Amino acid sequence: MLRQWRRDAGNLEPAGGFPTPNELVETWAAETLQRQVAEGKVAPWFAAAMGAGFFGKATDDLRTPPAKGVAGETRFINGVKVTDRATGNVLQGTVDLKPTLDRISAGKSFPHRNDGSVFGNKEGLLPQQPAGYYREYVHPTPGVNGPGPQRIVTGQGGEIFYTPDHYGTFIRVNP
Image 1 (cartoon, one colour):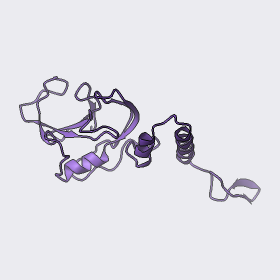
Image 2 (image 1 turned 135 degrees about the vertical axis):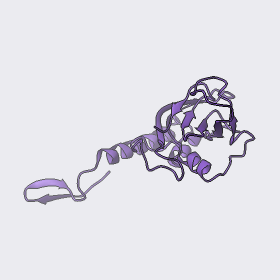
Image 3 (image 1 turned 180 degrees about the vertical axis):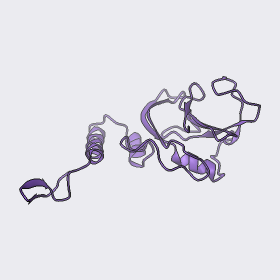
Image 4 (image 1 turned 60 degrees about the vertical axis):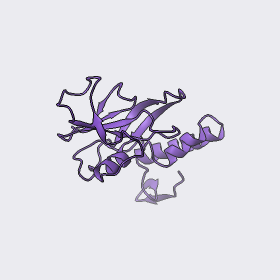
């Protein structure tokens, strides 16, 4: 990040002001990612997914304005590890749930037979509720053919849960 410097009343500072910590981290992250792609250390599809904002920015706030019809949800989840069971490929980073939450709020579906279907909570990892209380939705995984392992599960009471590993674990998305 190059900046012009100016001198005002004896103070030396950049003409546009000092960069914020977020600007510094974003610049460093973008330069590091470009270098690692050039060196063959990062798969091009992963870099493209990051560039498209699939994983969000690690420097963004965890709390964002809620999607229409979904109160107070978390948009980004940091430190997620997603494993494609078919290939064994592992993705790690920040997941941006907003596109899927917006799709759910708009009543649209992902092209998979179970998207929007009743989730039975057979694993018993979510709070016990009557049959039909929960619904499951596919959260697409970049580089994975088909629905992949990520899901969002919603409850009739407004609860939202995210699972990166096809119901092995759940993360509560909203308070």
